Amino acid sequence: MPLIIFCGLPSCGKSTRANQLKSVLETKLASINPGDVGSYLNKNVILHSDESLGITKEQYRESLTEKSLRGLQMSSVKRDLSKNQIVILDSPAYIKGFRYQLHCEAKNLGTSICIIYVLSSQEICLKFNSTRTDKWDEELLGQLCMRFEEPDAGSRWDSPLIPITYDDENFSLEDESFNKAWDALINSKLKKSSTVTLLKPATQTNYLSELDKLTQGVLNKINESINLGIFGRIKIQDDTFFEINDRYSMAKLQRIRRSFINLNKVRSLDIHRIEPLFAEYLTTNLNRE
Image 1 (cartoon, one colour):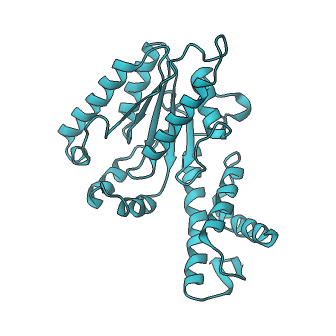
Image 2 (cartoon, helix red, strand yellow):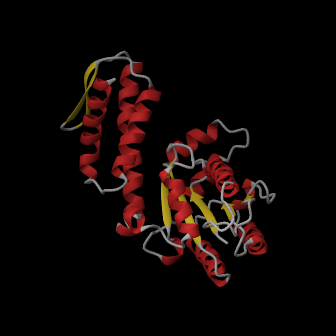
Image 3 (cartoon, rainbow, N blue to C red):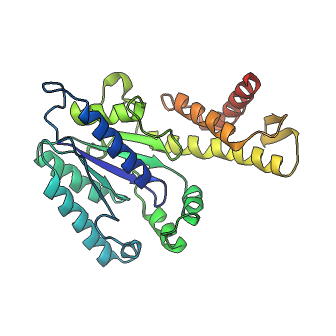
């Protein structure tokens, strides 16, 4: 049983997360005793990726070759998916029609399914891409970003939907995102007490994208000022300021940012309040350290 689909822009970190999840799932499965929930599942998790299937990045450029690669991905999933086999598909999965086909295939086999959406801006993807040895052509990457059809938790084929940001903590047995995925796959649904994506309207993934982008923008302004040797009070937006009292490391700022994002995944802040609230949260936490 179940199928896990990774979804997101090219070079957002999907493959890293998919491999992490495979490892954590296999650790979890190895610890299950006979008769426990999930004991019927195979201990090995199958991961299909563009790399494992021999798909090149250039195949995404033309509609004809792209159609054939989606056929290869679909046939690989159909071949291995069963009631006792977890399959992970590491793919851009940016076309909703393709996600719908995968949803139908899983349901036809009586298996559960969930989508893990790795949230990242095009700017971040381009930055990550520049450090890769197997780079995407920047023009092609931009085209795929334009074609991307964002998953919608309100659509049955995109549900359960588990959004994570590109810089979330790594998957672990104690990780909230991992436990949501486990519940979605084993119980065929997310627990109501933690079903953020199902309780919120279809704009949830848009909100998380804005939360990610605006908080990163605040850090970019702070880092730029520090690099220029500008300390003291800096302007974040019209009525929002931040006091730079030290040469803060980006690692520390990013750690506080991740904490702020995790706290606010469960509630939708007013978009216009994200920057001032984050600046205040930064100040409070930096003063504690």
